Image (cartoon, rainbow, N blue to C red; front, side):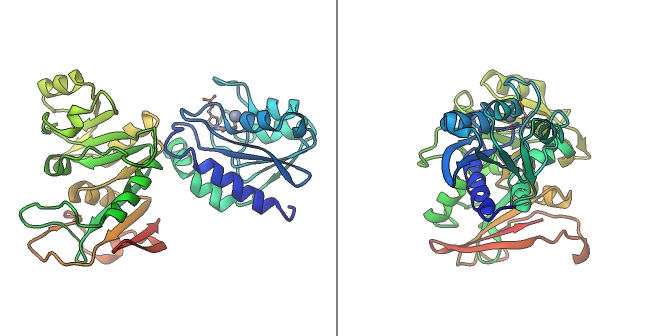
Length: 363
Ligand code: AOF
Ligand code: ZN
C-alpha cells in the first residue's frame, strides 16, 4: 500500500455513492485514475448500471492512463455482459496498477477480474478501505448472496415513540428539515416501501421532491389483500413512477386487474396465516433486481420486518413533544417476550436536524 492509496480510494468511494439508488441490479462503483499524483480520470456506474465506472474514467484519462494507478471500489469485471469486460479496457489502456478494496461476489467476475489483470502484468492491490466498500456495496452483495435487498427502516416519531394521535393524525411529527433528509435518504435507495395501513391513512406519494433529482425510486406497498384506495396519490401517478404491489395468493382477481390496468406491477408473495411472509416479499424484490429498500413504516410492516430479523439499518427521527399512550406506537406487536430476543443494532450516527434528532443504527 502507498501513502495516498487511502485518500484516492476515499474519493473513488464518494464518486461511487453518487450512483446509489440508480444502478440496480448492478453495484454503484466509483473509479479514479491517478497519474504522477494528479487525478486524470473519474467515473461512476451510470444510471441503469451501465456503462461501468472504469471505461468512463478511462475515456477521461485518454492516453494519460498509460502507466497510471487506477482506484476502483470493486473488482473490475471480467465477463462479457451487455458491455465488454472492464479488465480488457484497463489492459488495453496499459495502466500500471489497480487498487480495489474487494473481490466481486458475482460468480461471473469473482477473482477472475483480479486474475486477468495480474496475468497481463498489472499490479493489483486489494484490501484498501475494504470495510467502507463492503458497507457501500452491502445491498449488491446481500442480493447476490442471500437473494434479498438491503433494508433500511426509517421511523419518525414523537419523543415517546408514537407515530400518530389516537385519531390517526400523523402529518408533521418532525419538521421540514427532517422531512428533507428523508427525501435525501429515499434518493439513495432503489425503492421506498410502506405497508397497506400507511398507504390508506396517509395517502403518500412517496416520490422525491425538490431535490434536483431526475430519478425516482420504485414505490412499493405491501398489502396482502390489495385493499388500497384507487383514488389515491399512488394510483394517480402509477404510470409516471413505478408502483409495485406485494400481495398474498388470495388477493381479489378484480382488484389485481384494476391495479394492473392503471400501470402497477403486481407481485404475488407467500403468506403465513393472515400476514405476508416478509422473507418471501424481500426475496421477490431481490428477484426483481432491487438491492436497497427504504421502508417507511407503518408500525405493522416495520414490526414484521424487525421480528423476521430482516432489517439492516435503522434511521430514527425523534421530535421534541409527547403524544401519550392513546397514540399509535411506531412498532406494532412483535410477539417478543424477552429483551434478549431482539437484534441489537449499533449506533453509528446522531445528528440534530432542524428541531429534531436523527439517529442511525446498523446491524
Ligand atoms: C465493474 N464496474 O461500474 C460495475 C460492475 O450486466 P453487466 O454486464 O453490466 O454486468 C453487471 C456485473 O458487473 C455486476 O453483477 C457486477 O459484478 C459488475 N458491476 N463492474 O467493473 C462497474 N457496476
Ligand atoms: Zn465492468
